Amino acid sequence: MRKVGFLVLALVVVWMPYATARPPYRLQAINQFNLVADRGDVRTASCQYCHVNANGGAPWNPFGNEVRANFKGNIGDALYEALKAMKDSDGDGYADVLEVFAGTLPGDANSKPLVTTQFLMQSLEKAGGVDIYKPR
Image 1 (cartoon, rainbow, N blue to C red):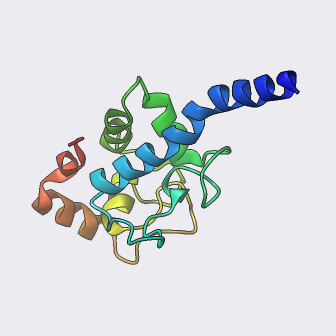
Image 2: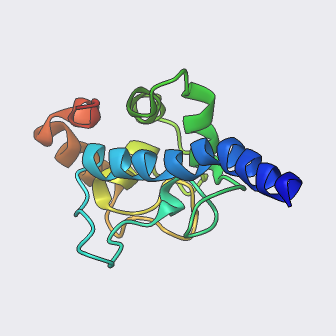
């Protein structure tokens, strides 16, 4: 019985960082991308900005892989660097930053803005450019 208790405790200790790390990353993205905060038990922003699955975890989508490539210990900086790179991670013709600005998913080619890239770029520049997504 002691071995089972020790095993359970060891698993909790090992998995605790993973279980507690996900919500802060999602909350940082909500804050940094100027998304509507959750309301009670209702999720207003999907984990699919970076993940294939709505609840997060592996696998990551193309934008999530870009964020991971920029991750050096600070998720806010990694998100900003991914947007500042002006890449089109999902290959749908819209830079990641323009998709975030438009409220679509930069890692899902089926989720794209309904306006032109030129219109979005002009609107983004009027709003302050990519720097509106600097970490806070």
